[in-house]
Image 1: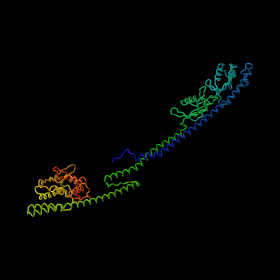
Image 2 (image 1 turned 60 degrees about the vertical axis):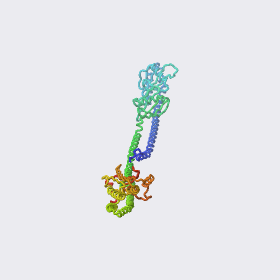
Image 3 (image 1 turned 180 degrees about the horizontal axis):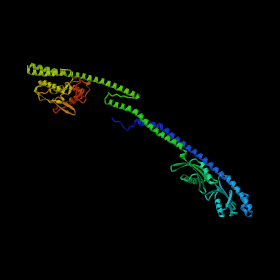
Image 4 (image 1 turned 90 degrees about the horizontal axis):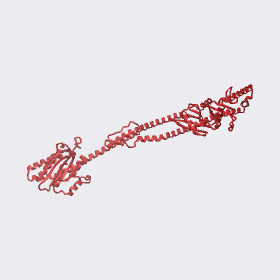
Length: 584
């Protein structure tokens, strides 16, 4: 019997059971990790947003302070004098007024670290007054061009000649076409702004984006990330604050932005998510490593349990199959001291008791069969006694001494065979010789009116042990029921053949007394339970052959070619080891 490999075995059941138990825990852990990561990301974005707001607010406050100082200069008395009546002043007065303006500009420049330079351009004297010195002034065309740029911008901050400027001019009316009499330039220190941007974020970058001029001040050289951030800043429009997460080349960045509407500039700081989440990602890698190791342990542990269960079960399955095949001597040994050992011990006890019971039943059956054989054989012996002595009596009466001597010789051989020992089985050759002795006795009785022919048994089957007296009762039945009424031309033939492992011994006569109903009843009696009928004659032989050789042996009856009764004895042809006598 082969195992069904497609069935749902114990191992996948164990594995699925463990996975069902452990996977919800890991799925919950994954959800918690994602929740913690999202929460951490939100908190970092909030912190970055606060940082952006602080730095932008600080920068705006500094610019407001600078602008106030600048506006105070617009109404300065010395500046107005130099810008309007300078030609009327003496050389000494002009020099003193310029010196006073230089000191005032020095005071303004020192008031904030965000001021890189302060210059007042006065066309009337063609001078540009700076802190501590003065230089040649700018032309009216340049001043008008700068004023045109300032008038177009809503923000006081503007870019001029790649410089970030705060400027004022007088008069500042947009309705007049009069050229300005002076222009105050305050250059914002980009290095100071850059220094603040570097302090705004530890890892990543910061960008100060001027929306109207599309100019930037960045603490890093512009790269792909900042270019994308600039694009995003342009798309944000008038939004004052925002925090986003975006991906560039499989790298995620956290970005926080804050816009100053007054100065029309936006500060954005960005940090690679890998830096912020590095510790968490390390923990996440350990989590997945633990998950993979857990899966491997579950697979191996399930297989170990499967082997621990499967090995003893396979032993028991093999033992049960051997018991099914009749091998009751099989025993199971288990090295482990567990429930399987208890089960094996109980199996061994069960098989031992079953073996003892079967042996007891077998012995009882053999004894019963031998007793039945003795009884059947004793039933056969009396059939021939009366007729034999009657024939002998007649021969003596007729004083036929020669035939009487032959008859006594045949009768002596006959009774010597059936009385010399108590063996219930003898070689087939001796059984045939006994049948010939019986036929000789019957020939003395019936004379030439019955033609008897015997076919010799093949020599290799003469040593085959068969139950005693199986051929003679069949021949006796032929004489008694078929040939006894024959006045002449009686026939009695005994033939044999081997076919399909069976030796068939056939006894046929040409008696005319056999009817179809009688043949049917005779067949029916042969296959009835012997306990329900008297077991004599042909039925005795049938029963004894089956006891000896099994249900394949026995007696069959049929109508032969002379319309008489034919009897075929089936005897299995066995090997020498199988050909054993029960009580020899």
